[in-house]
Length: 153
Image (cartoon, rainbow, N blue to C red; front, side, top):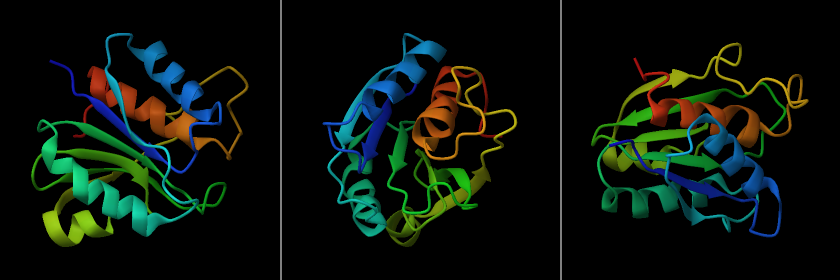
């Protein structure tokens, strides 16, 4: 079975951003299951993003891929990454503090930086755009990982 994708953002449900990210996932693999954790994290509040991951992750099947985009540094050179937790989950997020609770309470076995040259959505006027990494980088990478097109390696 393919891993479930659990999404959390600070986008709110009012924006079309959530729909666009899901479209990217389904364009990679229509069989992937996407679940909303929350899209109501306070704007740019990485502490809350970290806390919500910590409070909910353990209740999901091992191997679930969590997608956490609460990113006050969007458009800056901050790193995009995938973390593998000590208890068997993956988190696709920015290197911005969103992993703090997980690192301190659960543990992180390894982190891989997302290589934009190979793990970024191509076409659809997305290249050179730095303000929608949730769609163009994080969703695309999470979908590729969940579908088995790439490995954490």
